[in-house]
Amino acid sequence: MEEIALPDGRRAQLWTGGAASAPTVLVCHGTPDTRWIARTGASAAASTGVRLVCVNRPGYGTSTPTDSTMSSVADDAVAVLDQLDVDRVGVLGMSGGGAYAAALSAVHPDRVAALAVVAAPRETGTAMGPLDAEVERARPEFVEWAAGVNAADPDDAALAARWLGSQPPDDAALLGATLSTAAVAASAREALARPDGYLRDAALLFSDWCFALSDVRCPTQLWFGALDDRNPPATGRWWADRVTGAELTVTPTTHLATLLANWQTILAALRSYLD
Image (cartoon, rainbow, N blue to C red; front, top):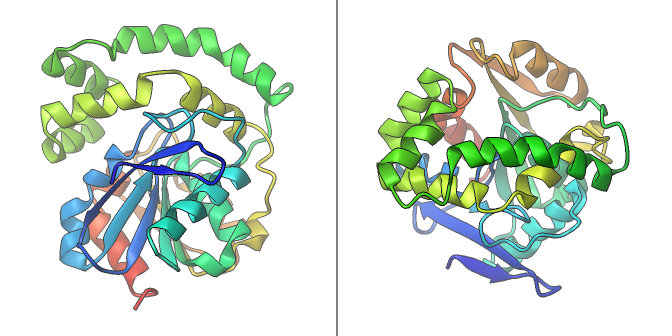
């Protein structure tokens, strides 16, 4: 199943993998990224006895664009879980997905057994105007950057090289070793096919998140990389100060590598709350 119809008629694109029938971990992808990031954890999930589910947020891939909020994305995730007949899950939020994972835990606490926040940004509330204005303000720069990646290029190898070239070298090496060239290219195409997903994500991440981290009550683990120049350990400490009981782990990794190098350990920790 690659798409699910949401209650209001919108479509949600998703990927499921790992163990065929097992406790479920919902993965909230980064910004810009897609459900493809969960595929990098498929082997770890299978060996840990976990099923992974990752849903493209509105505007990514074929998921219908909409005037989303973090809470509405949380509602969409619950609608997907309902259709998959999944009650409680562990939730993993990677980078920009960390805020969405926390929102799901805060807004639907009955559905989340445990939370893992990986290399996520902090709330800054630095947006300078209304959300739609922020989207349009960021559009020209993002469109110019995306044109350089050229996701419409049918040459998988060339596209994958440009996509990996936009990552820190350690991240690119791990991602390229985990996914095939065709899969890396497919991920880039899905992430950049249209700007709606990223632009809405960015505007929401730089605005007030409109939920309280103090409302996250489930067991929470924070994973941050000592070599991450985007969201360093100091950001992890910011999260730890705001989520009750959260445990911070710092690993010798760059941004994406904080997830890719630690899938097994992170999933094992989440699974312990799903047994």
